[in-house]
Amino acid sequence: MSKKFTRVIEDFECGNCGATVKGNGYTNHCPNCLYSKHVDINPGDRACNCHGLMKPTSVEQTRYGFVIIQECQKCGHIRRQKSSPDDNFETMLKINKNRIK
Image 1: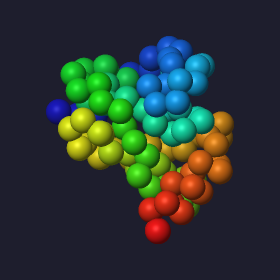
Image 2 (image 1 turned 180 degrees about the vertical axis):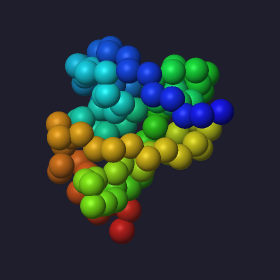
Image 3 (image 1 turned 45 degrees about the vertical axis):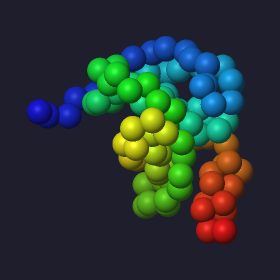
């Protein structure tokens, strides 16, 4: 099965912090707390039945920017998400700081 991207423009309420997030078709996580929901098998397809919260566990810097590593709190699936310019940088720093403790 080839990976496909389906652009879905939708607003959502964060399942972790309750923030209202304005979607742009590429939005895949809350810019406030960096959590998302496990709803896709391929980006935008909404084909996953898990719907668990995807907790940000670490942040990596690449030559293209930052990548947020998330783990589903329901099924354990791990996913890498590109960060967004709207993401709370302080939250990204806290995630890695808490990981090092």
